[in-house]
Image (cartoon, rainbow, N blue to C red; front, side, top):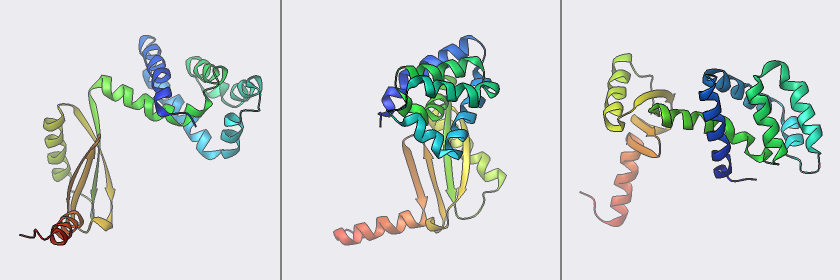
Length: 182
């Protein structure tokens, strides 16, 4: 399978083209359709990734399955990927496109895990703190995770802020094992 880094150049080119044509929102929706189709149809994904299947057949499948549902820009993008034999990056395209858009648009995505749902006031406070820390507009997705026992775990980009009871207990256990308990 191809490295995600190969997808970056393709995604940036698609983003720049969509932005220049004023097609950014439509392109996101179209890429979501493609990702959903690949998730729901593992056989299609297998065919697209199979190296022995001719490019012409793969392009014809894209045209027949997706042409009525996708903008010409995305259809041409998919044909380019097939033509360059880069089908392995298909699974990274949607997330990569959103990441580039977030980077350029100054958006940070965060995931907040708690044991119980957060009240709106608490969520707004967390959002404000993350906005100040990151200097970006923050979009938060919440998840319920009983394994953290209490508190919360925040993931924003590559940063994890672990304020969970489980995290504190594991930290205490590690310190006790090292003989440094306070």
